[in-house]
Amino acid sequence: MSVEEKVGQLMMVGFAGKSVDESITRLVRGYRVGGVCVFGRNVVSSSQVAKLNDEVRALLADAVPPFIAVDQEGGNVVRVADGNLVLPGNMVLGAARDPQLAYEAGLAQGEDLRRLGFNMNLAPVLDVNSNPLNPVIGLRAFGDDVALVSQLGASFVRGQQDARLVTVAKHFPGHGAVDEDSHKSLPIVRAPLLTVRAQLQPFEAAMAAGLDGLMTAHIATPALTGDETPATLSPQVLGTVLRDELHFDGLVITDELEMEAIASTWGVGRAAVLAVNAGSDMVLIPWRIEKKEEVWFALLDAVRSGELSVERLDEAVRRVLTVKLKRGVFETPEPLEKRLASLGEKKALAARIASAGVTLLRQQHKLFPLPAGKRIAVISPESSFVDAMTRRYPELTSMTVAAYPTPEAREALKKQARAMASKADVVVVGVANSRQLELVTNAALAGKPVIAVVLGAPYLASQVHEAKVVLATYSYRDAATEAAAAALAGERGTPGRLPVSLPRFKFGHGLDPVGQMTAGRGALGVSGAP
Image 1 (tube, rainbow, N blue to C red):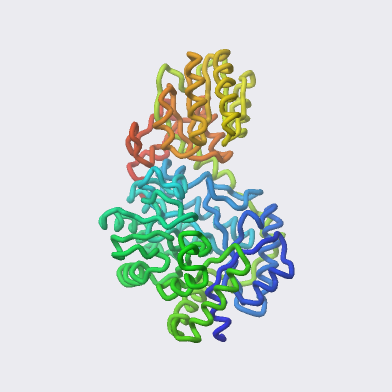
Image 2: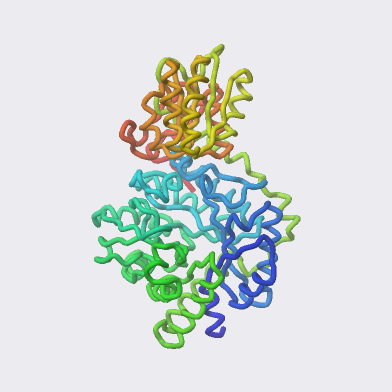
């Protein structure tokens, strides 16, 4: 391979468009890129994105085939949701506490992504969400307990890799303790060394499971490095800790270099050189076309000047090619029609996971399950929850509200909530974010009992003071809202256990008065994980 071709293997790029055109052809073939990353902007349907992926691969039919990557975490981060399995999210698995279920989730999701033409997933998230105010991770984590995240994360990795999907876990060395968004600024982890080291454990467990790759975090960890250099650019983090201490010889990919945590201080091109010298094998530049050109020339110039040694370049390329060989990237995919014929054959797994994760945190006044013969009002920002409740209680009254209403709309919604509550015997409020807390309050002001169904981060459960019953699903996906409605109707139990610690509820808390299911009983999960 020429130096130019080797530099191309270090680039993971994104592009605009939903089909291959001249600009995409020029980008992929011109740089002989090592990989492309597909985002929501590229997706219309499963069949369309599968065709797009095949077309991108065909652009390099005479060269090294590219990684075709996606961010498909489940829950809040889903790029393709048309006919394929859509997982309800990591924290639902955290509440279910079943490593076998986590393995099955990784396997089934990996199989569907392969059918769609992807060969790499930038998931799972292995961050331990130790800071409830974390604006980036939250529900994307399995929980805030190191052992729980380690066990479930390793099982998920095994499953996804058994589907022959390149698995890139994130965000090393751990993005869970921050309170800033690295898309906007550089978060600095002020935690002591012991805490920072603990956040490494899920990654170590995944490595022991044979993890293919890691994505770096744009965070500073002074406890590890002694300074505020981002982990993505730090030889201490990627060299001393990751390669020397943890002995990881897999693929390392940066998070997006165009994020402000990096770009605003170093610039994208300079950051690419620093990242590769620090130990990254690929750099992710998904957005602006001129930034891809900047990175290409910066890396090429660094090799020619000697700043980036040929040995380091060759080492990075070796890791890229090793993973491509290991996971069958060089193999010709099956015909598109054959692959799509079996797409989504395990979609029902999402319902199993959601049902296993439903957690009853508070029960008062014998309101759970919902008693028969009551006038029920349902208020929710998620129409799927309203629909699921209506199927079970056709006579209920309902109001679907905006998830993020304007200040003017919020005032009107408060009045409407109180008015609806005054005509009901019990009010069920879906809480996806803090905007719905005031709806709980105003419904309660009508003097009627309120059931809060927390469809978002469980930290909201500590703030629904007026609710007599609090149910948590950790997800707004259809499978989760259906599971919540089924639990309220007494059709299923509530076997989930809280995967984080809250001011009012301890880690592991959960009630199950119906008790029709037995999943998720163990402190850390079921023994005998794959």
